[in-house]
Length: 130
Ligand code: THU
Image (cartoon, rainbow, N blue to C red; front, side):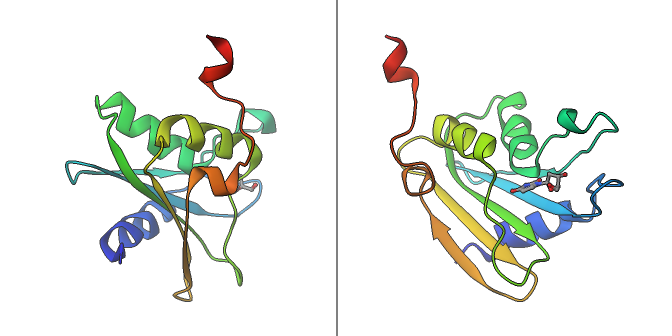
């Protein structure tokens, strides 16, 4: 399952700009209409300006007017699966919505699927702002 999405994330990973960490991450968003939007991490000499691959992919989908998202694959070359950082979990929770698969994969063929609520229990959300 999600083979094509994982392949898109692997391809995006090779486009990462990561001269400081040399840690390449790729991501790809799948919309409910079946379109794919890639992302990769983009680092900066002002380290805090770095953007993670998954947020680039989500932004790419949104910038193309896509808001009905089905899944995202996130790929790194790690022996165990690379978990999204805290900021990305918050963004995945907000933009992924209730029915959204977060597919973590590595180059060894390991794959696990999570939901936003699983990765960010007791999340802050827009519900608290109304
Ligand atoms: N990174 C991602 O792109 N996604 C993750 O899920 C974890 C970390 C990036 C940020 C930075 O460019 C590099 O990996 C090392 O932290």
